[in-house]
Length: 85
Image (cartoon, rainbow, N blue to C red; front, side, top):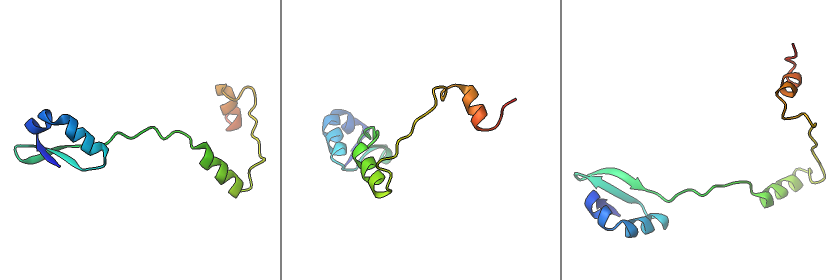
């Protein structure tokens, strides 16, 4: 779908719906492409089901990770990297 800026303003709901469906929506200015409407990306986040499948495939299903109590202390990072003064 290609619309002039004026048409895009008048038919914004229609253009936004088309973009959300995956249709390419180009807004033109003086007959030249100016902007393109694209659907918003949703936050991917962590896919725990996929992670569980990968853990099983790698044989890591029973592996547990424990972090020291001072893990978030900047001094811990310096010690772990061997940067103690």
